[in-house]
Image (cartoon, rainbow, N blue to C red):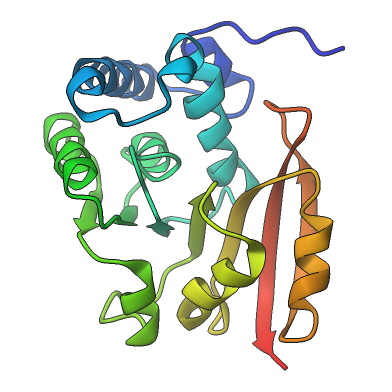
Length: 216
């Protein structure tokens, strides 16, 4: 059995090496999350004691799966997992940019506060991803990777991310161990080069990397 992760920045370092500046950014992010949580209910309260492993380190697996990606689109961003974590880790990388899509007003306000206070290379679109996908990206432009964590079944994620995944972007999706049934359900509508990776944080979790998505 794997040794439980330490609840702190060290949990992230099990996934991605941290610079001193990145460690400080993530520490400030967690502090902001804690200060907003009581009023805004940004994450499940039961996960707060394990926020570093459950949310921050888990989110770092998106960048670890596609380490060369600099331009990211994070859909259904919620409290910023994984989008703000990705932006925090890439903040010292020239040309990095993360676009976060979130429709919930209180979460949008939180995301924008974190971005401003931490100086992250990120922007927030206060939109539903269905609308953006339906308008073929709505001017977001090309991205290297599209991420989503605990957002929707795989077939729905394909539909949301299709404007980018069918034109060369890579999808990086956090899924559970039973996602195989979701793959089967998508096979009649889509083809894709899909790689499943065991989560380093959750024994039952998977990081699914999707390339070359095509509608049938």
